[in-house]
Length: 131
Image (cartoon, rainbow, N blue to C red):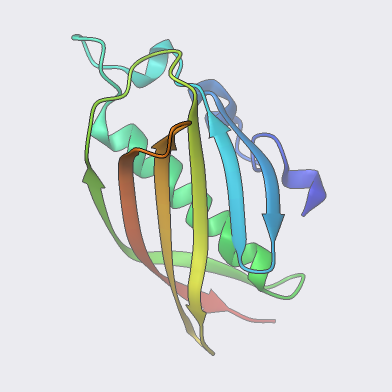
């Protein structure tokens, strides 16, 4: 998994300003400094961009909880945006696997400010594909 630190193996995340910098058994963390492509015409990070970042974080956390060669695919995800984010905000992203079962995993992810204020959050269900 060390080779996926940084953009998580997805160049899109680099474009969005996301850098995965830590992970452990079933969790992952990143720093997100939104870039210009993230914002809508009024300068606020678009909700769909939050969804991309939260989904990627959940996926990274799931991979951190699986055996090498196993992976997951998003079945469903619910995203809630709590406050606006803008270009150059320094945000923290954290995702945790709540339960990894034989064929389904449940995860949660949060984007927050350095002060701990929640910006957006997600709950997700992934299909686990084992080797």
